[in-house]
Length: 436
Image (cartoon, rainbow, N blue to C red; front, top):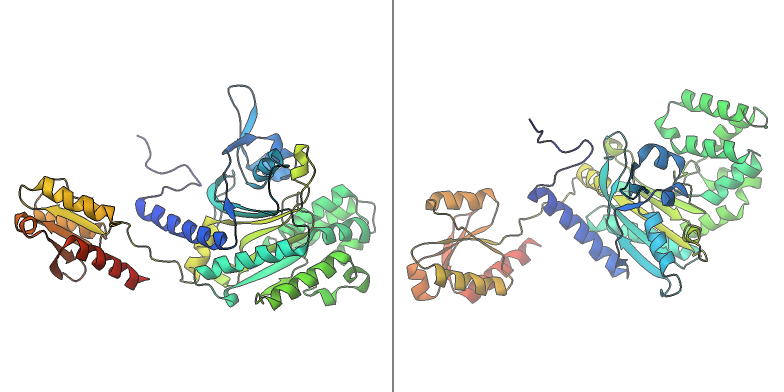
């Protein structure tokens, strides 16, 4: 017997689920388009080498849905969108007008263990700026992300914006601690998940990595000490003077002056992808019931250049639909979305042509109407309308046709009255405006 359950790590979207998703995505679109961002899309299937080049070994080797197509090519369902958008920009490098402000809401696939906030298929809001090489790009992106969450009713105390710099991270491990590139990469990956590990596990793993490199064993203790620093001013002077940190301080001051005050420095913030080149950021839920990153991003100046064209300064971020819904649910601000249908129409008598003419006029004026086309009893038809959460039932009988009116019933209160077509339009519009 075939199962009625979806593939593990994916979701079915019944109309009520799709309705909520559509509302969330449209709210995001409205927010982004206020800032001048334009929507794009790309194929769900991409060549695997595009991700091998920069996404990181873990993504490619462990999390991609990799397969060979009928032409013998190695392809994958896209695990992220950044390489795809970089390919799009590279393809028209000379034709595009910079700076580009682009966004997309693709569905992505990663073969990983399903858990809270992580599924194998999810949708992700991707927002990118191409052609701005200053912190003005990061500043705008963070303001947009802040505004996006506040669009749904979130407040600044419900999330915190954490900043770091991969340029600073590279300086730390390659120059300050003198690790070789291989050891530095391992340490970065370890720190990226340190908050998910027991302190002793983190310490012993770090010591194993350090023991394999040609540096003093005391370096592991120094790294642990440095990772405990919560503010830039607490760092050693020879570390704090690095230009990337000065850049971060400028960014934080700029955001504070623009009203984004919940921004902090986090030296442990690494971001898992290999393509980040400088500023990285993540937004974390402050509620202990959902203690995780909601969204993240940063600067990745070199990715467009992988496609054989001149590199373009780029920064962007991603926000998953699952983590967004978890955040809104945790803070009890997940919106209740009404059904799209305004009226459930029920005809009474032998007047289907005349009734359909009335319904057609109302639809032409922007009223969404579902017509019951069954031969069931009246009570069953009304029950269907109520079960679908449609707010109004409309009755069109011979008397109504003669008077050029309809009877409109509020299915929640039971109140009903006769209305002309124009009165129905005005009534429904007033109903919607009062709900907003």
